[in-house]
Length: 129
Image 1 (tube, rainbow, N blue to C red):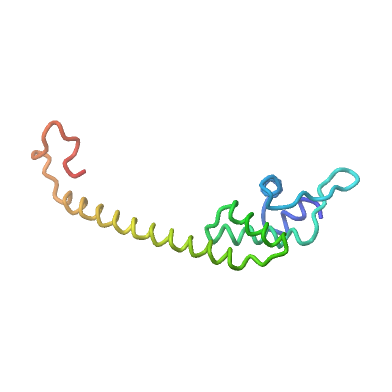
Image 2 (cartoon, rainbow, N blue to C red):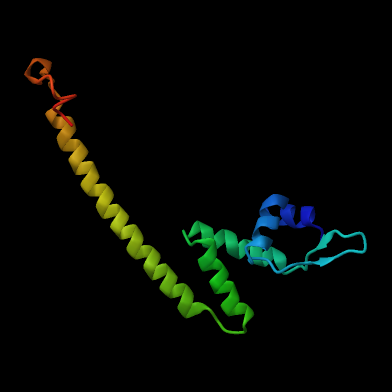
């Protein structure tokens, strides 16, 4: 199928597909006699996999590693599990950091609830920060 057909079938753009090809996420397609890219039907599944990996927060490099494992004839299940474990760990850390930030901002906001500008010294921009 031509690049526009693949883009429509996969819910993406031709520009994105060319980028995926440059990044090694799609193997270089064959060419028609007139020079157009000619993708095989399984290209849709590969693009779908890229989209699902991105939705899970994986990087394109991680997605490419997973595809490389599959392309080498091995099941990437353990690799994917490890990537997802690492992603979950990262998310838990981000949640913890955001929770601490929320608490800090809440405390600052509480302190600033009843401003007293006359208590600020000239060398302070704002005593609540």
